[in-house]
Amino acid sequence: MTLFKHHNEFAALRKSSTDKGLGLVPTMGALHQGHLSLIERASNENEEVLVSIFINPTQFDAPSDLLRYPTELEADLSKINALNPNCLVYAPQAEDLYGSSVAAKTYDFGLLNQVMEGAHRKGHFQGVATVVEKLFRIFQPQRAYFGEKDFQQLQVIKQLVQQAQLDVEIVSCPIVRTAVGLALSSRNQLLTPSAQNAALELYAALKAAKTLWQQTPYAASLEHIKKRFDQHPEISLEYFEIREETTLEIFDPKHHQHPRAFIAAQLGKIRLIDNLALEKAIPLQHANRSC
Ligand code: PAF
Image (cartoon, rainbow, N blue to C red; front, side, top):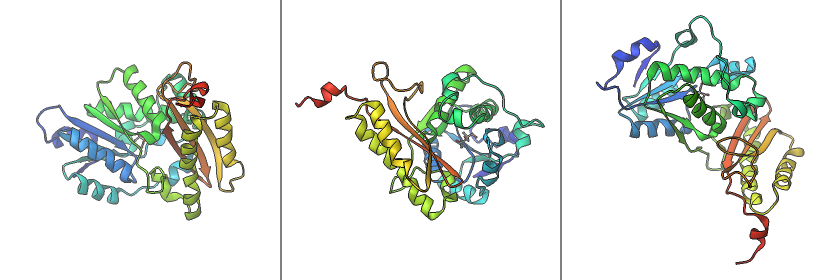
């Protein structure tokens, strides 16, 4: 594993003589098994792998969230090294990416930036897109790896690649969960033990939606799921929505094919998100018919 802090060191550090087969795994560090699964996949699919570790200030809407974000570079480096000792790791200071002006660009991602995370975290996706575009332009990877836990982010990045005409394949990788179903997130380590327990309710609600979705009209199943949180002492639900997964339009079985349930909730000071693909709902008259 080779660490570098200035992007202009990259060319000299590249091992392969061609400019083919670079896989980029952008992260903000505090690496968990979810990140490691991206690095592993990138290592299998590319000649060289570059992991970036940078807590991007322009994507945090709340300064307290940025301050609280875990930093553990030494531990991250040894995890990467154990997985792929040939990895290059770029861990810059903000100035190396942003120069003297640490500010987000303005993009128009339409609905992708207007709902759910876009609505609740103002400016978040502008910041994400800004730093991801910088990384793509500087390192010009052939492939870049992102986890589906941040499913909306994935759609925004795909849109960014189209709009900015960037020549990079976006590889989406499945959510990694604990044995009891909690989606891995660097924020999980900030949860109190009782909030960790309460957090299991997020995945439980998604799974309940998957079951209900087949049997109950859309609005009723949403109401039913939301009610689970009404009296919950530790969870404040921000949203629970079922949307078409690529456009993020509210799912309408007449027009859409790929429903996905999305949830965001606050547990104490920590905000968690999760999502789950649902099967396309069977129209009720068919569902009730016996075979
Ligand atoms: O998903 C993340 O960790 C961040 O949003 C990303 C893509 C590394 C950009 O800072």
